[in-house]
Image (cartoon, rainbow, N blue to C red; front, side):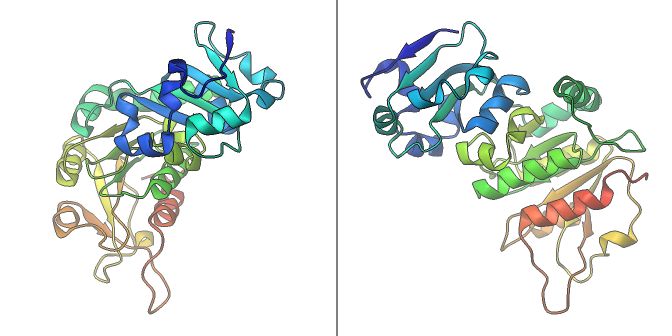
Length: 292
């Protein structure tokens, strides 16, 4: 593992890490994304489906991370710098002292994703799960749901949705073009690295996404607080299910609800709204392990 010291914050070798707070707003650094912290670095090195371009560590982190750094591919450079230099490069205090740069590659739109990978999603995710030695989707039916996200622009919510999806055995996450990038640095961190290994697709309108999923034979549950929607507990769980979540505040637009099956989570009288990631977790936990 090659380790290269960096003493100049303007060193071109660490240009990908320069002012990452601002670059995070440009959707994946033009083909790159930044991972921050030990937990997500370990995921990137051991379970991620994305290539690693480089690591950038504070000098004080080299010894504590020695075991993890053994997993770095031989051709991936590790740059290290004093904390003060690292802070100048990043543009703000890097308290964790751990950064890595990954290569985004091609992220397909939902329709293409379903057409090319739909039949392979379960086996692909299970293979990664076995390689990582964790139990995956102990579902009596042998099927896994999809999670659909529409117009979710909050990076914390996107990351939390991915974390919930991984926890409850989702086979893939589909996002429309109005959702934020799940490879945004904060989304990756909030997801506990789930957005690095869970298969996902992004692009097109919300209606395009829903129609593609319906055409693939899924039933789509559109989560909504509307009183006329049947409570989730009253419905049988379909063999092929996709759970659709919309933005907090406006919720799902009428066209998406009309195209899908509206479903609500029963709540106390006078209160009908919870955080979108929380709603997704409740719905996914409800269907997890249940036969259709």
